[in-house]
Length: 229
Ligand SMILES: Nc1ncnc2c1ncn2[C@@H]1O[C@H](COP(=O)(O)OP(=O)(O)OP(=O)(O)O)[C@@H](O)[C@H]1O
Image (tube, rainbow, N blue to C red; front, side):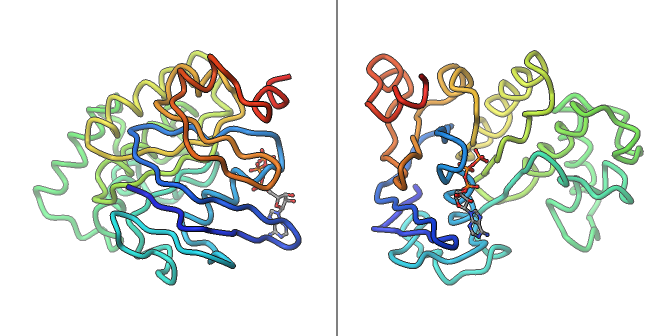
């Protein structure tokens, strides 16, 4: 469970407050451009520290812990894969940064590539894969890692609607089934409605407490109505 304990996140003159707990398989973060969605994720990942309050994971205080030591994996739209490494190596990084994998770990990489639909593509470099295949490889790396919390900042936005839907389904079939919690920023309210269990609305300097996606779209609060237009 992720806890924001009276948190204020500041970037320049921008301030975002968050004071809630989060316990869902998939949580969508939605809201207007510049509202603070990426700021919220960066605050969880530890790219900067809150100016007030604490962030906790399962009652362990994360505030003051470097991003590399947090129980968090983050995927962005770009730069998820190292171009000079093969897909196998890119995925292997999720197990060991020095890539000294045991036979079992190599097998785990191969099995995970099978699982995300990339059988036989492990020896290729990222440039020899399509955009959708690259997204699957990035997902495989998150999948092999032991970290329980996955943050996705619009990772599939460049893929086109059908492939984006495939990836969101794959997130549920793989990451959620592996017991991970997923927090995903999306500009498409329909993604939130169809794929998320809960929704956090980020607007007017506030990250609002999560509400079930069914409930929030059936009865949108004023800030969501303003955003949906
Ligand atoms: N490094 C920074 N220094 C100063 N201000 C920043 C910095 N990063 C972001 N901001 C400001 O913080 C506010 C929130 O930005 P953020 O990127 O979190 O919004 P967002 O909801 O993710 O936006 P978008 O949907 O457009 O990606 C914006 O007003 C932005 O200009």
